[in-house]
Image 1 (cartoon, rainbow, N blue to C red):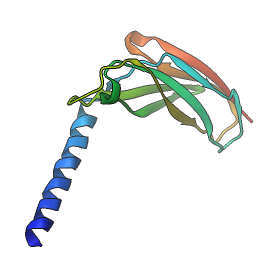
Image 2: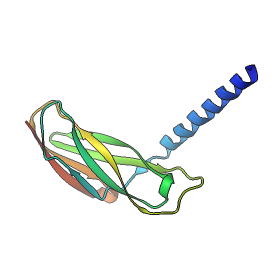
Image 3: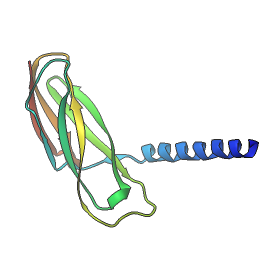
Image 4: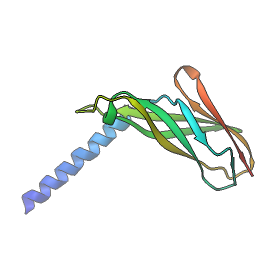
Length: 127
């Protein structure tokens, strides 16, 4: 029983280390399309569907969004990685939901940043 417990702890620590390694290798993942509402209410989530291409099937992962605000301009970077290992070799388009919220009213330009300082823009008016 004690050996089983030690084995489980070892397995969990290896799994956690693998996830941390993936975070260290995050890169700016390209965004090819953004869809969603153009209006919202203060302190309410406005969900936007973000479309991104993949080339290594189950191994390509869009992990998270990193956001910075410059006045009414919100810059969003989609961060992802390829996990490696045994992957399906299909290619296509996947989606991930970005949740925009604002505690103040106004017109906001959401810029989904791609490589080489290009971006896709989506405007949201918050009342």
